[in-house]
Image (cartoon, rainbow, N blue to C red; front, top):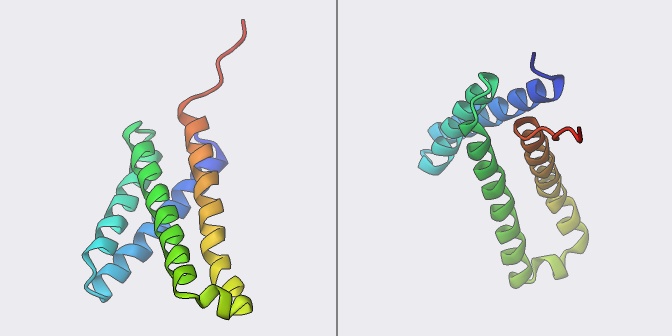
Length: 120
């Protein structure tokens, strides 16, 4: 039986996959479509408890985090964060939340596929 946490992760990853695939098709962006397909495939793999799915989810979470960090770095280098601090905080909060969700997903998926060993 799959825990409710893993079921929630499957739902979140599948929702992201559908969103990314839709954005990729609507905006003719291949990278969004690729990430959408990868997320949908990893959600299906996680639903089937396939070990390969954890690595795809790790990769997606890492790429989301890296892309957010690069965006923050570019905005900082351009001076937007310094010139508009209130707007910057409001604009960066959704990305920071997605980074926290990515870290939580990685930890939960790791715990699911690598259960604690018994001390006996």
